[in-house]
Length: 150
Image 1 (cartoon, one colour):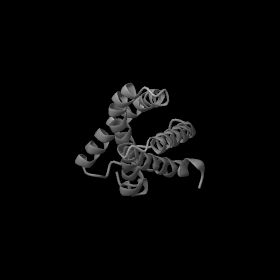
Image 2: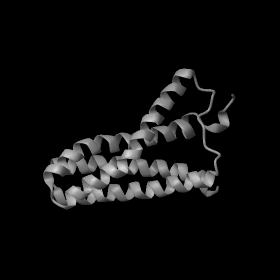
Image 3: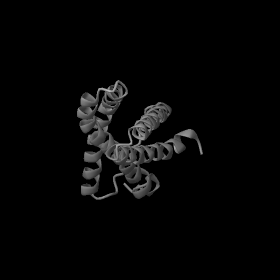
Image 4: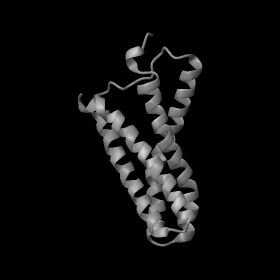
């Protein structure tokens, strides 16, 4: 198995780990465990950076031969998949900027701006992480390419 075949599974695992870390980070801050929250969220950011590196590597190795969703699922499934994928991609482009700004204000101890931005960043980052796993499941597990009849 070469790197191109492995990376989608690695990417999904990193997205799943980011999801768990985001939720743990939220629980920790709700419990006022600020130091644990800080390290959890920095870990989540690190996982997301590793994901981005793996994602970009995967697409660079594809050499323009992108993975497409198969044509054999019902039309409603395909439309739902593409709607989720579209929102995932658009919001994913914003996450690095939002996350860096949110982390910056948190590390600077500017609680007002950190909290204000976190209220926007957290749900977007969580959505992107969860839908990243969803896209993987749809593309590689539920409707795998070898079953493509169309």
